[in-house]
Length: 362
Image (cartoon, rainbow, N blue to C red):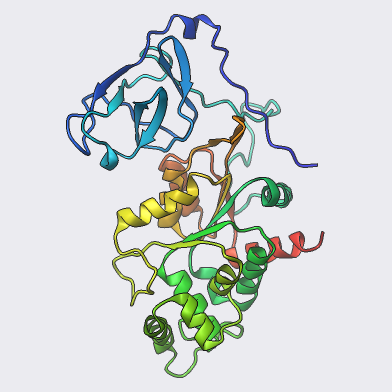
């Protein structure tokens, strides 16, 4: 039986906490500007001492400001600060300024390791069997008790089996939201409409005559209908990732980029609107799985803390996976501060097919 790791809170009776001063808050001098010596938040639970009590920032995000608001600690992007907001001040994290960063609340019980041993890092040589087993159990648990958000690059929409596997996961309840770009939706819809992705047959991967027009034809047709939903309905589409999202009412956010073709009607052209839309799903996510999209993965990692406070007040772990054939993409995610992310170096098409086969077998 799968169970979440238990959270261990700090012992606030220790002198480190009882002797700590109250935190200092100063007003934001103008909209979008924090006061000098502002405190920037991390992915970990952070407690702030206010009136002698240690308050947890219940909904955090890396690189944001902490604001004292109606007796609680709100975490806000700097661009959303308003003049007069009472912003947390301080650059220390061990109670010196009434701020405590708690990085070990979900620590695993690790066996003692020798000072020198092989294969400690996670790379293409790592055996991921245990990771898959844990992930199957986690997803079964989260389908009923959590919220699973997928961050998808276009790579696996080029393959029929991978598209079918992702569609199955959506329709089986293992997907609660998808974050992606114009390309994922475009090539998936192209697969449903013309049987190709970037002009290649999605099963044989053989380029079709004039196939380089196919994604543009697809975008143009969707724009003619005015929406993806209307396109699917009017053109009689019956397969694919986006089709399954529309069929099952699973929300998806398409964040645009400078090089987008078209784009499709629902694509956000304003990056801050896209960020807000992505965060609206990530702020309630309990498991995040990112596949083959380095920029969207890092963006999602920056918006996802390592913990979540549930409706009943329980503090639970947020599981964050980065799946990519490139070790560089996984390592860069960690370099950008997502220290609790778990990397799996593999082909994402194989990964999603393997998930579907194992989850559908029970």
